Amino acid sequence: MLTRDQLSSLLIDLESDRVERTTSTGKTDKFGEAICAFANDLSHHRQPGYLLIGVKDNGQLSGLTVTDELLKNLGAIRSDGNVLPQPVMNVARFGFDDGDIAVVEVVPSDLPPVRYKGRVWIRVGPRRAIASEQEERILTERRVASARSFDARHCSESKLNDLALGQFEAYRHQAVDLETITANQRSIDQQLASLHFFNPEQHCPTYAGILLFGKNPRYFLPGAYVQYLQLPGADLTDLPEDQTEISGDLPSVLRELAFRTRTLTQNRLQSTHGFQEKILPDYPEWALRELLMNAVMHRDYDSNTPVRFYVFSDHIEIMNPGGLYGEAWRLIWRSNTREFSNSQQLSKSDHR
Image 1 (cartoon, rainbow, N blue to C red):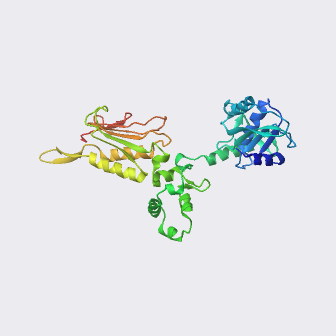
Image 2: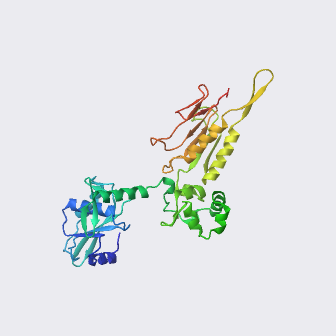
Image 3: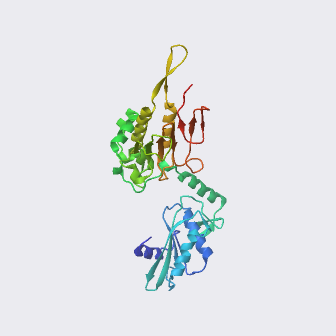
């Protein structure tokens, strides 16, 4: 929310298109249209807009007394279902000698166009207007341009020193040719940003940077680990023989999973025709490795649920949060049909 001094400056800036003044306290539609227009931010100021209630068009105060009921009514506009998508807004009261001001601060939406009762409202200079087809198309294109996948979004709580920069250097030598690296004179944050691991506007790493090079990814993503259990029987209620939480940056997690995959895949001899024998593993190692890689890399990192890797005496279960329908995906290797099916087990197979 703006400060008292900033509010005083807005009162005398009569030409700003980021401010709307009114003395009315009961025109809910007028308030909703103004909030919608500020959220759309057609001029692309990328700064909040302000609805000032209790202020005349010339910037003078009307002598209004702001009540709790008025503030509650203004705050309710955000979630009454008429302004969609819901805007980010703050409501506050400021008291002056000549009267009170109710201030509604509206943050520009990342998902324009915003509509009030089905109509797209915008600011055209100091007045409100309904968006034309071309103006609505501009807002729609802005929404598409700003849409980002989870890994490309910035992790606002993190800082540059939350990344293990030595690991990034090792990655960079594999991802970028040596000639380009030698000629590069940019700072480390610019190098990270060029590969989408750092957001220069927010001055913080992206979630991709945290997952790949973070010193402690679980601090920012509590579910970013693999829960490993090895049980003696086929029942989850058995006392585990081994259990651990595999966490850290993605390369470290994948290396640990690859190691456990090799230790779980035990070979055995099977007699064939005559005196010939063939070495067969208990599990198809390629399938187990692929399932674990997919479970870690394609999981929903918005969820606090870990990837589950359960090893039973006769099968292996791998579960991860997310999927096509918002639940955990499941995949099973069935030894009798030699097919994968939708129930998330990997059973021992004779590989015949």
